[in-house]
Length: 259
Ligand SMILES: C[S@@+](CC[C@H](N)C(=O)[O-])C[C@H]1O[C@@H](n2cnc3c(N)ncnc32)[C@H](O)[C@@H]1O
Image (cartoon, rainbow, N blue to C red; front, top):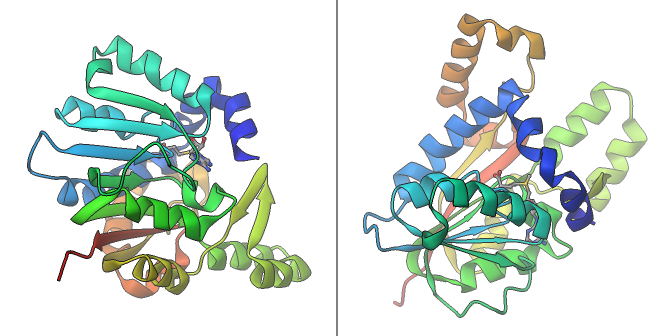
């Protein structure tokens, strides 16, 4: 279960992420291309950071003055987030809620002005289509929902490249991969379809971690290589055909309004 894994690794989670150079590129691409352009203009807006973990996105959003609900299935990840929020005096602006993304009964319909589900939580749920329906349900009409999930094709490519053909075949058919915990692997078109079925218009579909995870990691220590990969990633990530190349697929959807 994802909850057990994140509970067991919560204390070291931020250090683990900080140690990965490619995550800095992922962070910048996520903020510049999927969050910043879509956050509400009104600073009184209420934002849901679902599967928000130790607060990577809750913290900058709360610093900007938004009211944020940080929701996650792992109490220990939320515990780390609370300490960080407390240190910055941001706790009064953030409600911290332990819940399962696929069943957010504590939130009413249409109660958020912007909904975020970053870093794969939909893939880590036992019922990903239901999690998508829940994210859409709690979001108000005409508001944006931003999410990223695991990408089936990148996994299949990696398995084939390393000679694990049977495993690639099974994954392609079954879609569930257990890496520390079970993770559902989406195709870009399936992700689009699920959000459409749940009542959304698709604003953007893009790949993330396309290039940074492909280069030899040590090359990213060279600032010139790092800058070049970042620039290329920003140039490529929104090209629709590159969505299937990313370590993750990101989607920006808009909940349809009342006709
Ligand atoms: C890779 S972390 C991403 C955290 C954060 N969104 C970020 O971008 O740094 C995935 C998070 O999803 C949470 N998660 C996994 N399954 C979940 C579920 N069913 N409901 C809510 N959160 C879940 C985990 O506890 C973990 O904090």
